[in-house]
Structure formats: structure tokens, C-alpha cells
Image (cartoon, rainbow, N blue to C red; front, side, top):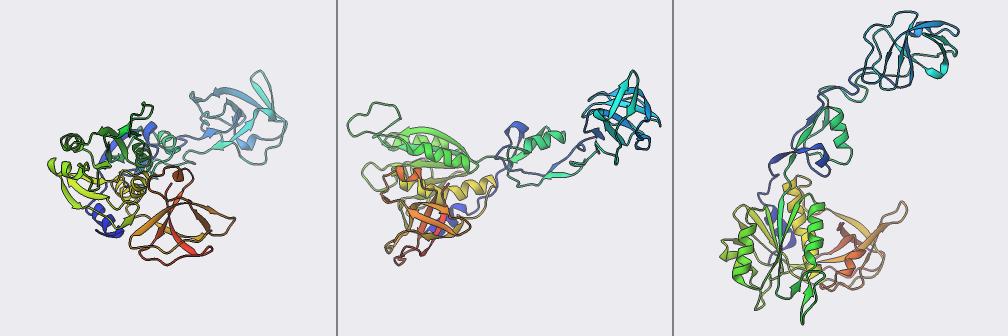
Length: 397
């Protein structure tokens, strides 16, 4: 049985960012850039009007002056000529400012009669022109390699005339459950049956970490059947079997793994909940076997699967990050395994985080996860902590 830190180190050993793939701009949210994105054009690519009005020379802006309207420049149809002194070009918002003009006078500040305008209001300075490149210039780096992209990046890249980007491939995470007692949600339960539910939270967690979950279904308690699930999943980057990881008469997952050609690296971790969590390799795939109890499966996924997914997806390369919080109630001394308690943390004003453990930490319970947003870490043989004392926490969601 190895420690939590040793388990994370072994799981991450040799894990590297995956290869790149090209995606369209509509699919960039949450992806991680595999190379810099460089603007192919300036934005705007030309001096553009910020108003509906007239493109003019500022030196002509004397109240009462009359200018000849010599053309127009709506958006997308530039005026083919140069604005001379005493001339004006009708221009609309987004239209290209013609050569010779250095000011756009708003249409509200002029009176037009036929092909002439009269200046009605004094103009303080040249205005209402968006110069070329005020947003970015051709050749600018818009986002650097390893940037995790958000909702606005697609529009920024599109404005730079970039149609697709190179991103780190999402790790393919094959997930399957195990147990004759499991039925899918909505089924009629027979004697001794329970609803299969852990894979739903696990798939959502994997997706939030930057992975691409693929739920393969539920394997029956048969070494042959489970071995076939491993064989089907071996092209994935990570394989996560849920359940069958202990030493019961019907726990066939690890023997089925060996039958499929897998190599087990460790079989137990000194952690509560989740002691039966195990790790191995099958070809290039890394296997993190999780216990079947909900708390055991989901807590150990957060601790041991999350850093692996993030490392491969290039969203994070470190082990879980711990911070400090103030405990709101007493905690007893801990035993011989590093323990993680589901808990709710909140910041009160500008002060530190305060954390409250769920009242029932039984490993079979799912409902504590409804409000839990962190895990409290209790070190091996940690002494009791009174309310108001400090504890370590790690973000759960």
C-alpha cells in the first residue's frame, strides 16, 4: 500500500501533453492551444468611420462653411477617390475613410441640401475615425501556446482572419462500470439490484478537466467479459473501470486486466475513502481502477484521475493544489490513512475561507456531493482540530 503522493507520482510518471489536432473556431472553448495564434490581418484592416456622417478635412470645419458632397462610402463599398478641401463624402458606420479625410462629422451637425452640406456645429478636434489596427495588428500574437481558450477567443481569431487553430488533443477516457447488481437509470429494479450512477458524475468531471469521456457500459461479473471491455478500451489514453477492485469473490477486474495483457503498477493506496484504488498500464493506456462506492470513486477520481487528465490535456501539470481554510466545527483525530472529507467552503467578506464538513461521510452516500465544493485533507495520524482551527482543503468543483 502506497501513500497518496507516491500514487500521484506513479500515475503521472512519464505522462506528457498529447499531440495536436486542428479544430474550427466554433469548437475552441475549453481547448488548449498547441501553438501560438498569430493575426493574419490588422483589425480593423483600414481606417473606419465610427459614426454615420461625412468624411471631411478638419481644416474645413468652420461653422457656416458649405462643402460639396462628391460621393459616398457605405460599409463594404469604399469611395474611389480622394477628399479634397471643400469636399465631403457621405459615410456610414464601418465605412472606409477615404484618403484625404481626417475627420467624420456627425450627420446631426450638418444640414444637407442636394449635394451640399452646411456645417452647423463647431468641431473641437478630428474625431470619429477608428484607425487601422487599433484592436490588433497583422503579426500580433493573439494567444500563446498552452492558453486555455474561452468563449471570446473564437471571435477574436475570426476577426484576425484565422479560420482554425491547433489545439492539444483531448485525452480519450474510456469508462466502464462493473457489477451484476447494477442496472441503468429508469429500469425496474429486481431483488438486490441498484442503479448504476457513478459513471455520470465521473464523465462530467473528466469533461470539465479537459478530457473526452467515453462510457462503454456496465460489465458483468465475469473475467472474460471484463477482459473484453479492457480490450475494447485499449486505444484510449486513460481507462477507468469502476468497481470490482477489492478482494471479494466476484471482484474480477484486476485478474481480467491481467488476462487482457495489462501490467499492474500498484494495487492499494493509504487513503480514505478509496483504499482499493489501483493503477496499471495496457499498451499506451493508463488505467486508474476506482472502487465502486460513490464517495470512494468520485473522491479518488478528483485526487488521482484529475491530475492525469490535466497533464495530458495540458490544462495543468501539477498534483492537486491545497489551500488553507478555517474549520467551523470540531474534527476528531485521524487514523493511519490520509483522509479526505467532503465539505462546503465559503469566503466570508474579505476574510479567509471557512469550511464545514458534511455530517455523514459514509462512502456509499452521493448526496453529500450536492453541496460539497472542496475536500478537507486530514494527514496520517493528524490530531483533533477544534472549531476555528486551520485545515487543508482542495477544490472538488
